[in-house]
Length: 364
Image (cartoon, rainbow, N blue to C red; front, top):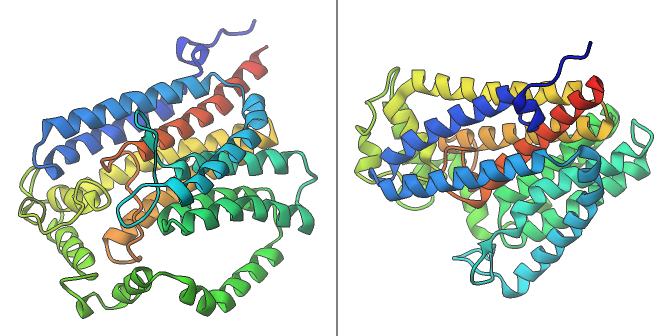
């Protein structure tokens, strides 16, 4: 006798993943209240974005993975077209990253965080694996076009995430270690040339990474103040709403890219452990969904989206602690912001679709 799936599975919702996401988002709202100077308005706005993201997550979870694979190329073409539009009619302060249609204002680069891994996974799933050199080259081209358009905005942080999402698909498809080794060596050789293609402010951020004190009131200010906040939290932190670095406004962008510094100062090492456990639950669940996927498309997509989330976390925490250059990557489900939050929750909807539709296939 076949046991009927429970209500959540009938709705294509994976309970463990949803629970870990809600815990992480709740921690984000708690620290946002402090980082935003106890602004109820900002917390409410973030709450509405969470609801919007959860709605998108549930909606995309209803779509079978095979249909997602069919939609991916169209989404990729649409996203690339909008990235080209950004070059001509884009908006932004300092960097041109947004399209503004009056009622709707968004970053097309966020679409590519989903379109690129879906498209590359669909492409690779139809090929003999491990991939041939030709297949690998075509996949790299699919990744490279939007990445270069995003770099031109300039938005190095998002370009890294988009590139990582596609490269992870290649990695999990079984590309040879020899190719990976040669690619790494080629990248090292190309570093000097890449340096001269970087904008002045990007070069300065790299210099600041090695010596923040060379410009303590300029490019080094973010890293110095964030490092002070992280270190001053100690084991148990100064307590919620008691962070001096944040409330005396030493930490810039404290509600967005540098919210992790506020979290460290107020909740300390123990609080960071709790946050890392919450993230680990999401990551472990995502990788388990990838391992249990019945089709290659689902396996590659789930693994890529999960590891891209890891890159989000790693880059932001490394940036705030001074281990990596400042590249403008938010802390997932914690930083204040709309488009990125919705994109991340939508990616969880894709994971749920892969997992719950797999269960329905197995139970019929």
